[in-house]
Image (cartoon, rainbow, N blue to C red; front, side, top):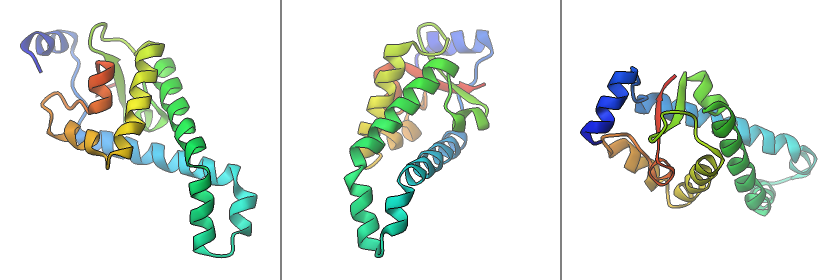
Length: 149
């Protein structure tokens, strides 16, 4: 993180969110979305007799699930600056340029690249753990930071 940005954050009293808080928020969001998918497809899941049928059913709806994740992430980050998991962990997403909640394009960019990062074995998230500004790939592309609320 450059010195100018550090000074801006310090002057505004903004602190980067801990990796642990981000991880817990991630788990909360993933559990919520998984439960939503199972709820929406409950009839199909309940009629599946074997584990293989459940796996096949899940695979059949992978595009819908990824779309649901993108819409969820983009909407909540744009509207509230945080997903439900982030709200629970008292962290939020801000644009580096404005130090405010991301606009529509930034939130959508962040959501799409978040899913792409997941598809590449979560390497983008690992990058965020090792990065001094704690920016994962989706934060880098959207020019956002995750900070304490």
